[in-house]
Length: 217
Image 1 (spheres, rainbow, N blue to C red):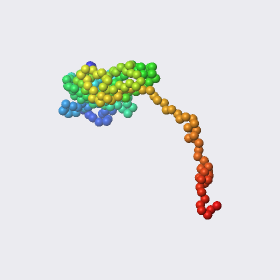
Image 2: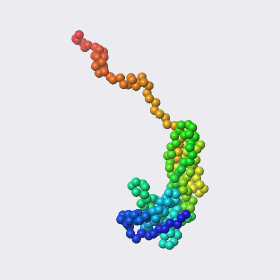
Image 3: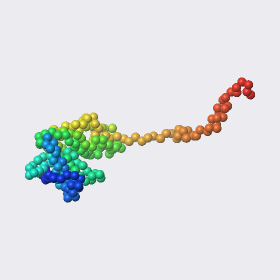
Image 4: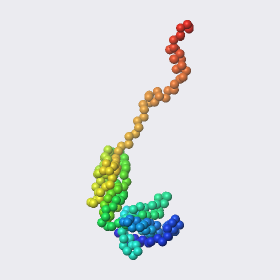
């Protein structure tokens, strides 16, 4: 794990944050463990690499002292491309934490390759709890043996030792199914439904069925 350099911020505000980003830094907040919040900045390049590689635990140099922080939240610009702010929380290396880990499906299901099925991934990430030094970058799940009609649930996932799921075990992760096309109505039924009602004919039928009243011819 590469050591990241973190610097205290003496100023805060929108203008200061904009200047930091223009100079290749990202504003951040450190909190947790009963200590006061601390405004800092760190290299945009370093934090982008950490996020890209799924890093959660960051080893940092702050005030010439090595400290460990958990990457708790990452905020992006309105396009979702550039990181504009991060939240870090203080952690001890032996404590258990809750984090969100991406689920990566591996392989091509039999149901898709040979049975004309369609794969749907309903759950893209999993909330897990584990010791901070044992956080997986991602959860790789083999789906090559899935046939049409098969459903992969959270309970079916094989998690690393010491990692426990915080999701409902019955939550669907992925499924392979066949798309059922709607069957069109028979042509005869469609034609019958399309015949317009002739108001004049209906009126004549009703008139023919009426009986003259007494005294009328």
